[in-house]
Amino acid sequence: MSRYLVLYRSNVSAADQMQNADPEAGAESMKAWMEWAQRAGDAIVDLGSPTQTVDGADPGATSFIGGYSIVQAESLEALTAIFDGHPHLAWGGTIETLELLEIPGM
Image 1 (cartoon, rainbow, N blue to C red):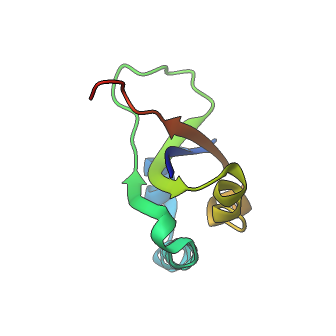
Image 2 (tube, rainbow, N blue to C red; image 1 turned 90 degrees about the vertical axis):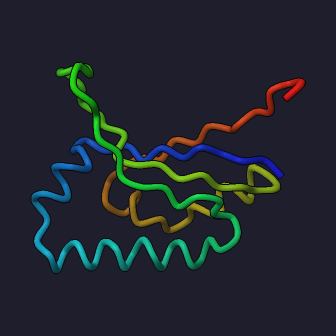
Image 3 (cartoon, one colour; image 1 turned 120 degrees about the vertical axis):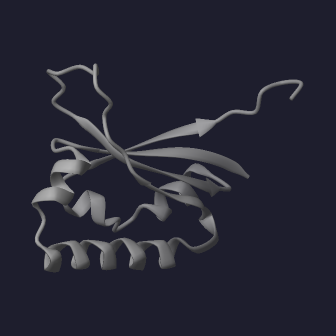
């Protein structure tokens, strides 16, 4: 089974999104994420967390990595199915997946 690093990209940083969200919208967002996580089940290795760009990063960035997850899947089709109906996509974000490769000899 392959493992994947999942990057959630957006035009707005996660910090700005959380800072500007009213509590009701934040609760709805969290509910949507938890419903997705329940559907994904054992495919989730690490649900992850929001991320924040550190000082000194590109000040002209137009896309932010707002968070990450680590998931596992048997095939590309299974990986694609995990993200069907993902709330991040519904909110206009994009999802990038990177396969985690094993290091020979380790």
